Length: 312
Ligand code: ADP
Image (cartoon, rainbow, N blue to C red; front, top):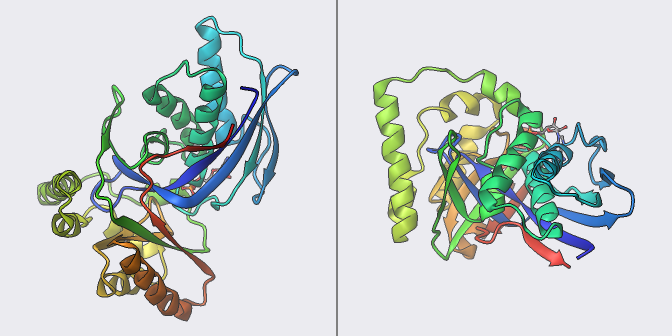
């Protein structure tokens, strides 16, 4: 294979009760990446459409993640050809739906295919995490793991890296409202408290266990009751204009639950079925106009496959 194109999905990290350990991939919302094997050795980003991001591989999450993979490949005796990458960015940087992660995970997934799959999905996640470190200063995996594994993923442990791909009910959808203001992951992290009360901790891990049990048993009621965040949302929501009302509108329109997508400013809701998701999207489109902030609404089925080849 000398060329390939892929779709790398947007992702919702945290999902209320799973700060830094849960994430889920979306259908339809995502970047498109085109790879080519070149005669010229090395790894380069030739063009980025739709965003003003650095082409320098050392400054781009796709570049850094790709370098991490290629350096490991070489250290294991591999002799890779040259590669060039063109990215069509459809997810805005700093949106909270995993823009940096879509580039990082797409880059390592595509290179792995072109090299005949020398690396496992778990290894791909660890390379992609290097890209996240560039974007936010922290090598977190909650956006890159669902892109690579698909569906919902749990980071059971970071050291050693242990990722659990979770099942997902057939009819689960996500609605995301992205207010067009930028909140840097780094800033959204710096305001968090570093200590929890025992009560907050027990509430949070009860809900995390409940959400995961709900995913295994297709229990929408349990999923709904578990979409609660007593740790991060009370602080981070202060950075998002209109968060409380937006969440209320989603819940009143039938969302199973709602919360901050990743580090914000996007706000997500989960819904049972496409019709329910569309009516939530409609309600928030009307409601959010009062804030005078430009915004986009995405409505997507949960993507259980993750990154997809679109043209070989
Ligand atoms: P998001 O959660 O939407 O990925 P982050 O704040 O984590 O947002 O990351 C965005 C930061 O990463 C921005 O500073 C952006 O310039 C940088 N960045 C570098 N390469 C990329 C890329 N390929 N795609 C998106 N952001 C990138």
